[in-house]
Image (tube, rainbow, N blue to C red; front, side, top):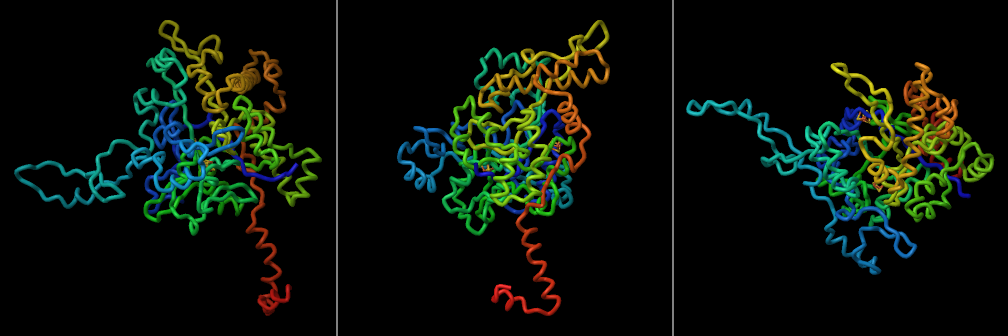
Amino acid sequence: MDVRMHVSMVFNLDKCIGCHTCSISCKNIWTDREGTEYMWWNNVETRPGTGYPIKWEDQEKFRGGWEKVNGKLRLKLYKWAGPLERIGALLALFYNPFLPTIDAYYHPWTYAYKHLFDAPYDENNPIQPTAQPISLITGEPVEIKGGPNWDDDLGGSPLYAYNDPNLSKLSEQEREMLFEIERVVFFYLPRICNHCMNAPCVSACPSGAMYKRAEDGIVLVNQNHCRGWRMCVAGCPYKKVYYNWHTGKAEKCILCYPRLESGQAPACFHSCVGRIRYFGVLLYDFEKVEEAAKADLNEIVQKQLDLILDPFDPKVINQAKKNGLTDEIIEYAQKSPVYKFVKKWKLALPLHPEYRTLPMLFYVPPLLPIKANKTGDTYGIDKDLFTTIEKYRLPIEYFANMFTAGNKELMKEVFKKMIALRIYRRAITVGDVDKGVLNEAGFNEEDANEYFYLTSIAKFEDRFVIPTFIREIKVEQLMEPLAYKAKMGFNIRQEAKRGG
Ligand code: SF4
Ligand code: SF4
């Protein structure tokens, strides 16, 4: 057992209100520069829908992530090269048809506002001047055809939703039924880089510029080493690495590591209005990573969960200490809300585990709305109150395609628990439903109450459990004696030479 620590996150989709505050806070801090206009390190998609960039989940088109060939993992990007993978990697540097174009994202634009003031009055044609859209890339007038969030709330039409790749395995009839106007339903999917444990963006980088920090697993791009080959953009199946056309380098979500290093949550977490986000650390067994990434698809989620270790287990603690993890990290791993959602309660799932990237961002799926009905002129809540999983307006298969690599039984287990929790809370409030439903779903009252606390009224420090594990703080602590000596007139350079 090789115990290591990884940062990890949970987004509770049941609570996301699609306000986009997260996207804006990220944009204001990190991508408000030339060359980054089209980048949204954090974006929020309406589902069913095509997302940003358009249809990013269509890996026949974009070839992101891993595939298993003869028992080995291979970047899907090199599929066309067959056994000549290395030659394929070399050629892809010069010709890569699988990269998304700017149109797949959107053409960033502003408006020619100045024209509103400067346009001369024309007596023969006295019309109101307009502010024409201008490309932020070329500076030329541009025709707006789409935007990063064009189909927000389905953009007023279910037409967008038809093209969601997760619906591809549904029959035509099932899809038709889904978009009958009285049945239309949608939810929000906020996305950032998953800081994957088996990150294809890192493996695809020919310059060694993409790397995963050993101490916490955050995936970063070294701007000095990046040569702009864009293999990371193609390799990432979530399309969460972007190319800066101004600097010629790749950029991506850095999980606000400067904030983390001072004990603060990333900006998108901090600003989340729906309080859907949780941050914590997990202890995992490094020796099992490869096995999990290569697992059969119907058990890949379970294999990823098997990687995550019990931070209360004395054997794990012992091994963690031998590997240099501090008491503080172990304590924070024990308090981690992510551990509870993902491993203890098994309520949060990775997005598209079939990409074999072992994403470290997990999602609690959105629960079904309470059924309403109409009796005479009165609208009310259906007497059954909670509909069944089978009658849910979005088929279970849709969620299974997103979160469990098609494993419908696993998806049902999660929904069953969530429904049981809802029935249990109702029982506490109005007392008309059997509390025993919890046991049936494999939950106890203590866990149910903790889940309720975390998803309803939890404070900052319960949602974001961030240890001071960070290298820089440790370095500062080490530097303290030297700073003291400098203040007292010691020559630090000479001290250092003497090994002092
Ligand atoms: S989600 Fe992030 S870590 Fe995972 S492959 Fe994409 S860029 Fe890399
Ligand atoms: S800020 Fe929170 S609630 Fe609002 S869209 Fe982002 S994730 Fe959803």
